[in-house]
Length: 69
Image (cartoon, rainbow, N blue to C red; front, side):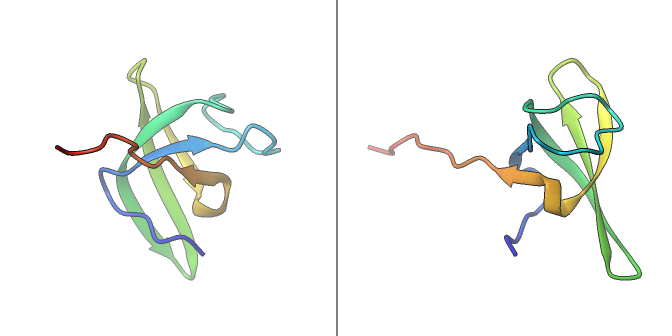
C-alpha cells in the first residue's frame, strides 16, 4: 500500500470501474483523507475545480521528476 498525504499529486486509475467524478486517467491533488472503518476515502481536486471522492486503492501517486540544482 502506498502512503499518500494531503497535497500529493495523484492520477485516477484509467481502468477503474467506479469513478463518481468521471475523471478516469486525470491528475489531481489530494485535499482530504478520511479513514472510515478501515476504508480510506480520498477527496481529490482536479484542474477544472471538480472534486471527487475515491477509494485510495484507485489512485496512483505521481512523482515529481524536477531535479533541484
